[in-house]
Image (cartoon, rainbow, N blue to C red; front, side, top):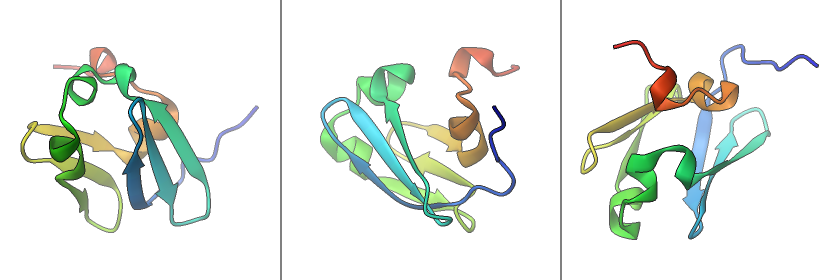
Length: 85
């Protein structure tokens, strides 16, 4: 199976009690369990909703949480522990 990750861009974000839903500009939706990202899982609703979409949709930044996630990384399922320091 091949996954297209060429230039995925976020259009909007929404949250449930346990999931983050990303709506991409090309029509795809990605649902990610919040527990996949411990910083997001332990955040308040107010903190989760205080985000900025970076650039044209290449990523997300949460000022209150000092957390940044790339759209491409989310689509590939990259966990924070997979990041190189």
